[in-house]
Length: 143
Image 1: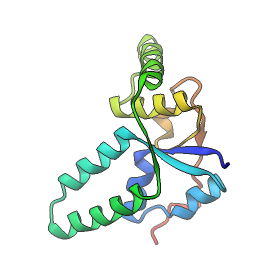
Image 2: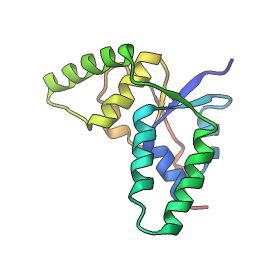
Image 3: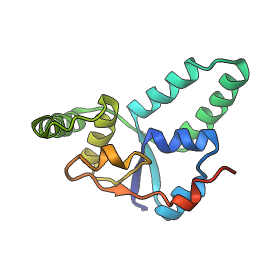
Image 4: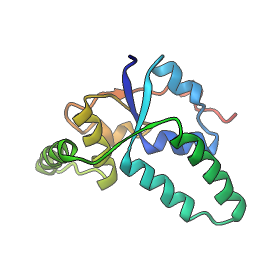
């Protein structure tokens, strides 16, 4: 079975906006199965609820429906909570806190021992033990 890769919200938002092609992720991790953290689903649903127009809401709904049908959703469970608490404490000790949702996403990747595909390397590289999947810059162009 293919390796599992956790996909950060930043990647999915870029795909939804058309600034990143799905092929960039496929090329970065060929054959990988893709998953998202439950908090990523919440972030995407937040964007759907905040859509300013009916057209934007419908577009986001189509994207979410297609996306959620293809990706595994990893829950915030006891193992993720343990990794979250450990990573949070280490970051706090160093004075390098990252966003609360990003920390949950990082903890999810750590608990499941999978790499994280993200466009937010600056924050996520602060998390000890977190393996990041680089997204090729030449694939960030608008379609």
